[in-house]
Length: 324
Image 1: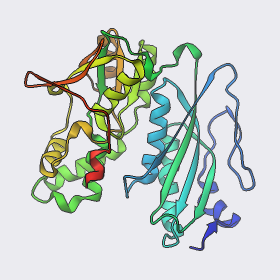
Image 2: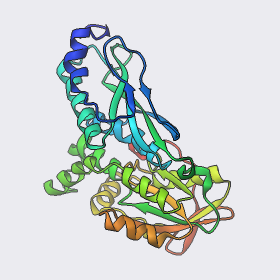
Image 3: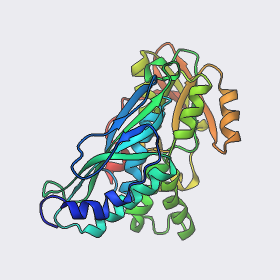
Image 4: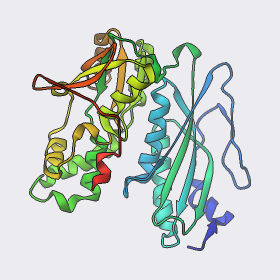
């Protein structure tokens, strides 16, 4: 492809034509020559989050939607619109771009989310397609959840299994390193986790059940998310590693590659703090979502307990995925 912006013809053909409009709140949206979007949120709060995808080579369209939607969901907000920036290298083809856009469009349709704008460009500043998304959500002021709201004594709950995203990415991008570690069926199961990375439902449900803080577990894994919530709230936590839910595939992959599963990127799992976890856990179970209590917030110190021994949880650094 030639350097620079897409032609209007190509923009319409492989991007604008893929966009479906579903939300009544969207009053101005993506089109050729339109540089802004307008969303009528009336008397609600507008919650905004943005993220790029840099650690995965496959499924970047699907992942790009989930990472930003999950951030908005962790505030208890319902996503309404998304803006997409796509940068493609000259070596990419229009078919490559269209494949990413198809993933984005399909994922947004499944979430009742409108694509309201963005930017596409061919540039030699990147060597592969890079996608960054910004999601705009809405929620009532009294349902807004912040990372700083956790209180000492609150239970710490995680949903589904931690490190699902890292497991899926490794199975997809490093399959050749898993020979003899996982069966072909296990590898396919691990790859399929890429379709289970949304925490939108648990975010909205937890906000209704009195969540004091939420954090979608992304880079840095569950230990990173715990540490960040503690930093935001100015308090501590104790986490029982034996209670942290891990899939057998994740355990096998991490053991083989020498990775710490508790510090592996974990989109698809939400960390939630609240005073009484049982009603939330039951409500999520009724919706087919597993939730597990893994610890409690404390006055000070951030520690993990394993085999009866407590050790400090260090601040998050580079995700385990980048060691590969």
